[in-house]
Length: 228
Ligand code: MN
Image 1 (cartoon, rainbow, N blue to C red):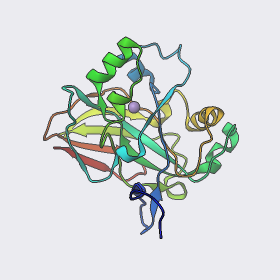
Image 2 (image 1 turned 30 degrees about the vertical axis):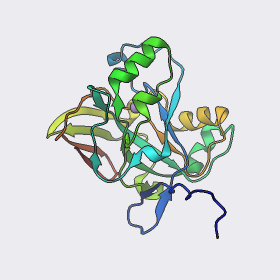
Image 3 (image 1 turned 90 degrees about the vertical axis):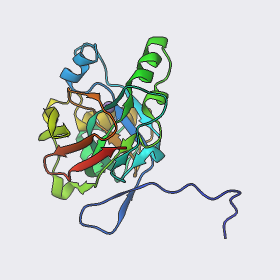
């Protein structure tokens, strides 16, 4: 019997390739401007920035394959990203030990209300309204690291309605996966169930209802979503 005054919020989970089990999510960390060409297209200098992170809400994750165009925006962008799923964590994790904490990898979209984010940036306000809205984190299936490998390199590509819009390589990340884990764990107690969205290559752009987005990363399960 529960003594909760309202029903407990649902545990958010992500499917795992080749398994009936699911990956339960605790937090969603997202790095900003982690590919040089994307940093430049957003108007910043990739050589002058330390890494920075923001978070999405765990219940922004959506594995339905549909992305409803969100309210209060006329400029919603896709950002295709490699997702790192952690099986353990801690604080002050060294880069050398970072891979010991990885369960697997997946594909996700960091959907962004770019117009609202732009207002936040201009006014020096937090970004959540542009980044952490309902169903803003479409995700696919996690592939375990034993099958996927370390994902230090590999093609990362997004097509919209069959036209390639983003096409990069994971080795173009400015801050590599171990550096991201080490950096995050300096500031947070990272933990099993945490996800890290590792940034997007150049080519971000707007979507409209009816668009079909296909994200692929070498060694991982393709993620397809339709904008409704
Ligand atoms: Mn992003």
